[in-house]
Image (tube, rainbow, N blue to C red; front, side):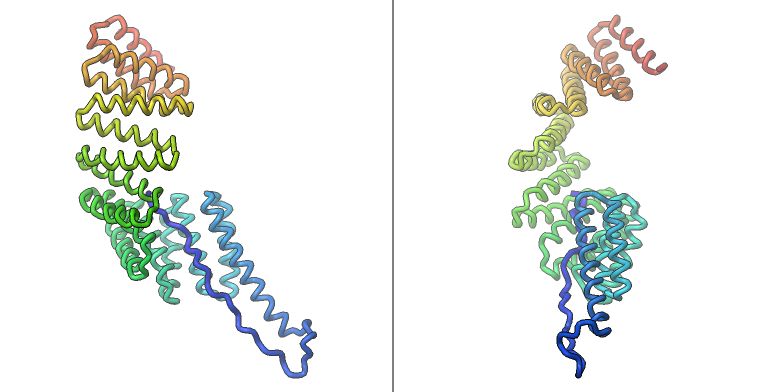
Length: 360
């Protein structure tokens, strides 16, 4: 879970106070200039709100260009109406959309404007939201100090608001910020807190995402046994959710962690399970990767004949994709394995194929 940020969509109280009719004007007289002037802002306000909600839905559907257009139109209307809350909300949407498009400087620019308004109108929920966007954008720009500073501010506000779902996201994002700066122990500490709260909320998808981050952080730290434990928990959730593609990704993580731990037999078991799943889904890329993992594991066991068998299958899949870079890598692995077997004729054959590939 990189960040489960969403556009702030808490609807404001739009109840407009009614105004009494001027003396001498009959209630049926709706063509007066005063009534017409009252109706125009109400109409514009409703349209602005609809455009904002439309932008949020488009953003969630990853229709980013359409979302930007909707947000911009809403911003124009809110500005005309001098609606500070509306302007703040739509700037948050523009900031998040820019973030999701990878335009981090623009994300910070929009979110900072939204932040100023949130503080002006004392909207703490909006403030926490945009601080999260700013913190994540700084992390992607490599400004870890600001990423952590803004993330901590967001976390403190969410705790004041007793927003546990928001707290889960803020803690996880702080973990990612610490991981990005190489402080894996703090990264794990924050993500553990995030996981504990997510478990009380019974949010399985969020738990899966945090478990992924925890597993990856432990793997990077060299704590492969703990990484395997987190990956196993994640695999159980993926199975519960019926997400077969995700299961395949986790099997890859498990195979790699077992290999790193030196448990080659278990690494092979997970890689074979991944290969079977990939074949069922017709996922050629995952098949190629699983075959590579099997070849490497058998190579480590000294079973070079089996390693060659899997490398050759991987070569065939790489050529069918096609992927020349993987093909070159597999030919290199085949040369080494065949040399270990003493099959020098095959070594020469694969060397010639490597040269031919290079000269294409």
